[in-house]
Image 1 (tube, helix red, strand yellow):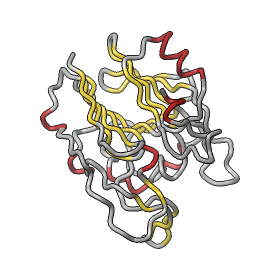
Image 2 (image 1 turned 30 degrees about the vertical axis):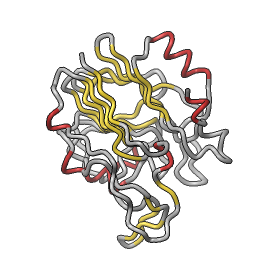
Image 3 (image 1 turned 60 degrees about the horizontal axis):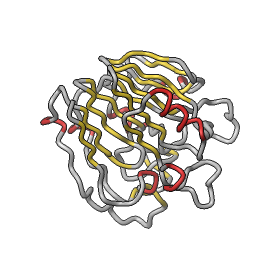
Length: 236
């Protein structure tokens, strides 16, 4: 199985959305072409922020999609929140048919409702526990919550929720919501996706014990929030 990693030569994934002053986002420096990915290969394309498109031997997975110019609270058709700096590397129309969309937690830059509506044709939406209510009305035909250690299959890939060191509430009062990383397995190949997490030895232990082939980790928003987000050195 040939493995390719598409990675724009700009900052860390968690740095792509910051407070902006109304300027249009810069174009993405890389444009992946999933239409030409060979079904037998493993391809990983960074779409932007915490959104990654994974072509896993014919199964297509998308993490934490964010496609629009801002994320935040929607009021009367307007989104109030941080503005993205770099445009997404792919638009929803450029994605292949998705077997699963994976959401790590309910923060507005990971569970972005307009972006989820744009990919609601996916076969399944995977959410952390106690977040299913946020998916009501988004259009997905199958919505599954996973707690740490729970699994499901999408296409030929096993998806397992794994523990990270973060938090999941969307509003100040819903601290009960869950938060996940995901271990994706097919045959002997295993991918770890953990976008928002502080440094924790649990991930290194998991990688060693389960034989992780490649890991996708967030490396931004750690100053001054290092207790919630890992630095580049900690991710390494």
